Image (cartoon, rainbow, N blue to C red; front, side, top):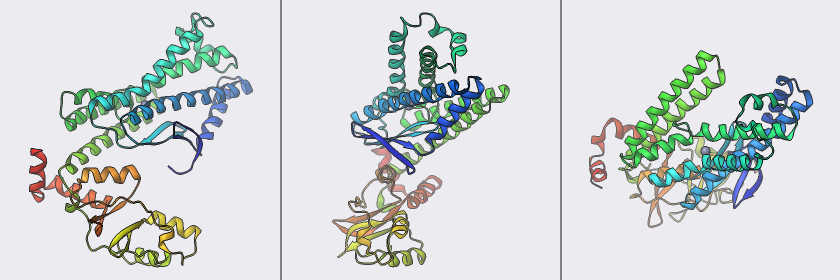
Length: 379
Ligand SMILES: [Zn+2]
């Protein structure tokens, strides 16, 4: 994700803050300053609790990220957005026990924090932790007690909200993992998606009846997130039976390392191709993406040779590679295209568009790929 600033690293995981993040601090200062009528005291309260809550969000995400890394899932970074945290990691394993552990680890962090806070606060605040009106009457006051109560309650809320049994919340994954211990993965996902969408309708209706706009937005977010997870899993189940040779583009134009940004720009404009393998003596030595070309043109003269800006160490796919894995490689690395070759010799490229095309053809007419589908079913 661009437009983010690296704050620090924890065990090699980058913690980044999106540039819009300070907006939430301004909003919190305004909200607690004005709506609790506490003025500057309320504003300071808003900023302090927001910073503490985002520390809690980082711990929640680290729960997911470190558990995922324990199962060899690569974790790139955690990005803090005004709406919460996002862990950017490789594909989560389909093995139910692993998905369950990774998904539950985040809310488990909130539970552990809640227990620690109760233990720490027990002596200080005997009866207020379970008293909602005491909690609300303290909001916005710049005292240790009010900050403690607010952070405690919100930590519980973060944990509980994430356990809603609906994608893209953690609870949706927990539900799918539990279903997948008994059912086939695609079927388990289908049921989890349906339950999530029903829950979204319920939330939306509740928001509508109570005039709560935020609840309606959350419902829409959950409904769309659930649909997207369903589509991703259906896509993967189709791609599992297909191979790179079924979909990659032949007859593509290539560049040589000595050609210039000008040559690449001309080729981009005069062909339908946007990503170019860079070849030397028939072997792929790099890849020039449209994004890479645009970036380079902003900073470098047009006669810069391609080999100074191309991506190197790009994986070369084999025609026999399963499309399921190719799609994962594309999305995990953020590539739009990858070169295909055999024994080091260049054959063509495969793009996300090629994958989308074959998915549409294979779902509308499985007869187009008879051997593949049979092989997949018997495997
Ligand atoms: Zn989570």
